[in-house]
Length: 232
Image (cartoon, rainbow, N blue to C red; front, side, top):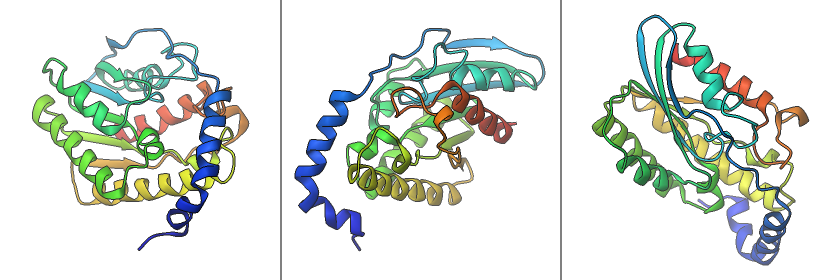
C-alpha cells in the first residue's frame, strides 16, 4: 500500500525537482578529508575491520580522517584489539556502487564490516524491494569475497531533519529514508550475521557540518562511540 508521501510525489514533482536543483545550487560541496585510509594499531585480540559506504563513511564534514568516522572508530577499537582497518568509501556511492567498488578490490580477509549507506539510495528513489535486494547482494559479497563474519549496518540517516533540505522535499526524503531503515532493521533481525545500529544522534546544530547535510566532527565522535560499543 502506498503511503501519503509516495502518493504526493507525482503532483509535487515540479516542486520537488525545483527544490532539488535549489539544494544543489546552494550546497557547500565539502571534500573528503585527507588522512590515512588504512592502518594497524593497538594491542589485544586481532580484529580486521573494513569500513565502506558513502560520503559520511568517507568523513565529509570533518577536517581530517582522524576527526572522521574511520579515525574515531579506529581509536576506540585499538584500546581493546590489535586492530587492522581499511576505509573504502566514496562520495555519492549507493549500495550498488559500493558493491561494484568492493568487487574490484583485491581479496583480503576482514572480520567485521561497518557500512554507512542509504542517503544516495534515498535521493535516487530506490524502492524498498530494490534496497533489500541490493543490501543482500552487498552482504553476500562481503561474506563470500572477504570472509566477513559480522556486518554492522549503520542506520539510514533521518533525512527529515537535514537542515539544508526545504519542505516538502525534506518530508518526502525523510519518509523514504525511514522506510528503507525499517526494511534494513527487519533484514538484520532475520540474519544472525548482520546487526542494525540505528543512527540515534540528535540533530542539534553542533552535530551538523556547515553544509547542513553531513555530520560534524562532534557527530562522528558520538557515532563512532556507538559503533565501537557494539563491535566490542
